View 1: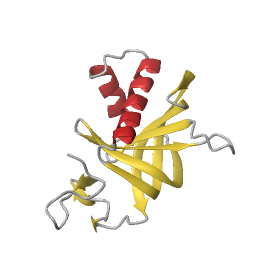
View 2: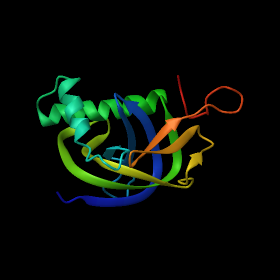
View 3: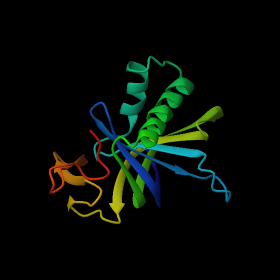
View 4: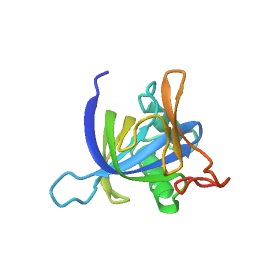
Length: 161
């Protein structure tokens, strides 16, 4: 299946969702910068993002595409609001969008949901630990971001729990 590839620099919220590591960011469809396009993507080179839709069906009990899209946006908005994992400011990323879903009405300030996979490219995209408490690890060909403990025994500022 073909993908739409998007590259940008924006605020990215990274959070766990079941066995996935997910990234959420917004884009705007016009110059007003309203962030009406929600991008929710899995951080995993092997993913197509379809896991998000399966979770919406299986965990959220949603069977219609509109309800599934709202469930996905709700999880992303919740993670950003409560800062459950990490908020990366000025993060450069490339997303490989598999699905574009247009909502029938504005929901959580979004009228479009994009899903797929995403690669976080920077500003600190190299391997090793980052100041925000995330660590990039190669695992079976997939790149994973995980929370790591800081030198004082606590978690980095972007990690919770």
